Amino acid sequence: MINYFADTLENFVPPELLNGDSKVTYWYEGYCPKTNQLLRLPRTTLAEKVACLLMDYLRQNGSFDEEGKMYGILLCEDSKGQLKVIKAFSGLWKGRDNVEGWVNQIPGRKKFAMAEKITLRELDRIKNEIIALNTLGVREEYSNLLDKHSHDYQVLKDTHRQRKRLRDEKRIYYQENFLGDLLDERLSNLAQESRKDDWERRSFKKEWQDKLSSFKQQVENADRQIQELRKERKNLSRQLQSQMQGAYSLTNFAGETLSLSELVNKSFIPTGTGDCCAPKLLHYAAVNNLQPTAMAEFWWGISSPNGERVSGKFYPACVERCEPIMGFLLSGLQNNAVKNNDYQIEVVYEDNYFLVINKPSGLLSVPGRGSDNFDSVESRLRVNNKDDNFFKAVHRLDQDTSGILVIAKSADVHRNLSSQFASRQVNKIYEAVLAGVIAENEGKIDLPLWANPDNRPLQEVNYGFGKDAVTGFRVMACDGITTRVEFFPVTGRTHQLRVHSLMGLGFPIKGDRLYGFIGDNRDRLHLHAREISFYHPHSGEKVSFTIPCPF
Image 1 (cartoon, rainbow, N blue to C red):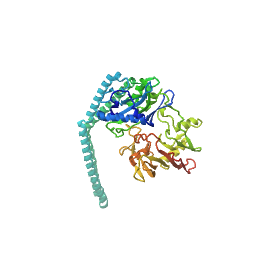
Image 2: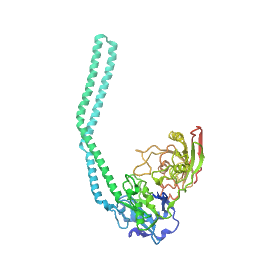
Image 3: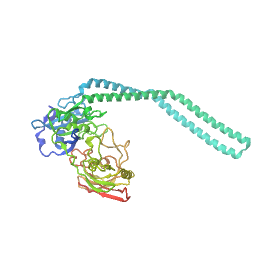
Image 4: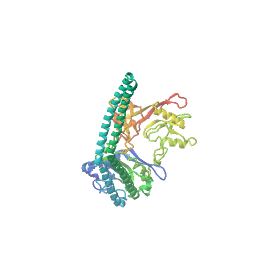
């Protein structure tokens, strides 16, 4: 069983794994560019079992532990209806793009290989020049001189301040005890001393300006060179990206082939687009007449530098590189379209000023970037109410969170309610089920949260860059396996309750596909916005709403 993956690219799934039900644990999703239909491919418990076999193979082999990267498997049926599995790794493996038994890089890399080699050589030169300019000896000399200047100037200021205090005391004494010419003479002497201090300060500044100017000019020249080199590096990188994106081509299950630049249709595409496991696997399957049934991707090897990627854990499609092209890649698959009316929106309260919606789990609060993220509470309300299409969410719930969502019907109402949220006049209560037994019955979680740009959409606790995030909690019940809690958020950061649950209480919320345990996301996220209270934007009266927890 351990050597199952060692020989060929396409392998049959072991019969013993086919016993029992296969449940969905995650959906790869995207909108078809032509029909705008939502297309899905699941990650299933069967796909995870097969992926675990690949982990066993990687563990036994040993050579895959040296660098951390994403690996993936795709379950698919051949023309005879037999279930097969193919595997891929992201990027290169030890500098190699083609490794026997693994899906190759997407075609097109060789077309720009020479340009890549030349550009990488230039980028390496620029890097070394920047390092040299940043470590010039004159920088340390200049820094030491600045420190000495600052110290000496402070000593001079302290001396002058002491002299001025003594002159002020003498001036008062002279004015109280002397008259006429003698008083004028004494006051004149004090004025002369003051002018002497002024001259001393000017001389000090002139002397140090002469000392520092040469060093300052050298440092500023080096900084300007660094800025020019960084611009050159950026232009070279974008030029290489453009060449790569024009050369790389992807094929979908409708038989369409497009280059990355044609497919994404953006002036700049993130580095590495098309090099992840999912595009490699789906492209190979489309070209070789294989019909995907499920896919799974996981991290293996050394954890990522920020600690967000851990060996042996499953992860969703990356937001910036894979999600934008997923709709095209899944186009042409049979029975993979999802109807847009899967989610029902319940209006629990409505007047002339706002609505209170019971948002279903799985539906966005507001439209996201791109057509593949258009379907949302806001967009549906605007489509269904063409005569009045202002509808704007005053706050947001995560896509996987259900419960109370307040929608303003006018700009004035939106400003009023938004101001209440900003000034923390709104009280909210969430209900959640945690995937474990927590130690405390109630308390407060105070952990700052940061959206790491290298690991979107995940949030992380970061005391250096994070924003304040505070959550109160109280245990409602515990069955020895899970804990039902109430959350009382003081702040409203993205994914606040989900990260505070994991990092503050020690367990993720049940069903969390981003922060949860492997295999614990087959059901919905068990987080529900249950209660809210605020001041009515027209009458000023306190209003409260409750939607019972559905789980």
